[in-house]
Image (cartoon, rainbow, N blue to C red):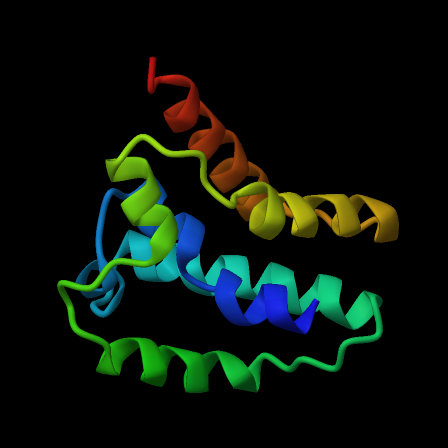
Length: 123
């Protein structure tokens, strides 16, 4: 779970909003969605016994804000090249574990569904 959380934080959001790191380095819907998704991850992680805290979000945002604004996570690159993404590993895992613990994951549900739609459009 920790490894999933470490990579998960911006991956699906970057694809959903067709943006790069720069798109989540500024206030707005993409950044707000990243934060909301991370909060869901923290709740699910805690239910799984992984001690994550909301205070860690600020640290991750600081790291993200230091990345090249033009940079793109691998899942964004995958969608641009019409390759299958790792959405099941990230949002899919959070959704499954959320259901296991009775924790709603509406942001991850939305991101998962949207990325599956993008993948289905590759034909």
